[in-house]
Image 1 (cartoon, rainbow, N blue to C red):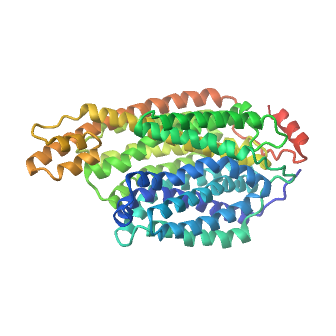
Image 2 (image 1 turned 120 degrees about the vertical axis):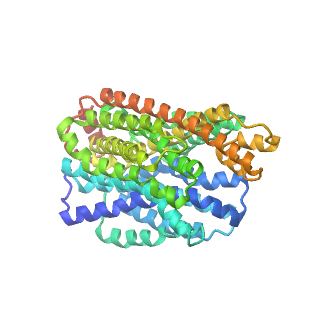
Length: 524
């Protein structure tokens, strides 16, 4: 079934609106980290509530991505995106003015529900309007580059706002942007959906939510508290839920996701590469959030500005380098080269010390962002290019879910490595009170806080010891990231081998399950 063409102006207007969908949620997520100390002073949440304030958004987002991708394919991604944008604006306003920790957690979860509608819908709309392969790759590169830039802009905007306004201001900036999306999107965006939508299998929804949410929760909690009984239960629920979900999808005429897509090397290889690339990328976020503030002692705003070279590199790698390099080298070599560049940059990070000059850090930050931008643009484009348009929402949701899981795994594993090495390497001077010593062994932040209450000479010794031990832990995590990125580079060469440089637009056959089976058989 052919798709009506879209004018050039409408194509790029659609991309601009979709880019806002990549910008706002990522800024919101990173800005929250800086707002937590301020909202803690205002709302006085418990330690458990602080964790839920930080995690509610990510849990709701990860758990509902697959469901929202399937819903968008059925009701239309324009409609779903506009609904999600309105919900995101309303939830942002509630979050900004939340009078209690309980309401703030609920509002953050609502933000996650809204966020789950945005990314799959935005990518599906890009796939809908950019039918020419080279243009599509460029559009995906711009979209991915904006997402990478947003990660760097979040701390900058958050720090600037918190210097002048209350903590809720970091969420309130979402409201006018989403209102622009609603007005412009209603007028500009074309609709993108399956012309013959099947019935949504309601039993698949709780299975997918339980599977993904159980795994993400288990990974995060295991890293923080070890394999406690509740963590083990969550892991079992996650594995069982995901297994039941996948089994059910193979038996449905209209599945929420078509698991046969994973038989395609291009699809499964791209999704896997995205997942494990995000695992390695977490190392850079550790550097920005901890190194600049705790070791060097910069303010949140200065730390955010210092991290911009990595975000700028991601935008250049995704939007400017990846599209032409695909034509020159092919998809597998570009992904492998990007991950190899990132691995080299992570290795260069090992040269960082307590007194390293900032200018020495700029080069490795640029390189790591450049490599990740190249790799993740190619994999995102390959995922969208290898499925018919009517399945682009579900395919995008699978890719985004894998990315969320990869980020959770990376933070859990690398964070655990950093903390374990820190505790083993920490050598406190004689004379430190037992309570202060116990606090210092918990984390570098706790060590610096405990040192502030000690006599000046002893405080300086404790702070220096904590910073040195932290650098040992950070180097160990970075070394693991470098090795992991190198393995992903090799894996990309194997799994993406044979994927053509130019993947023609495949609109599939919207004539119902039988037509889609013919399309899939031809693809396989």
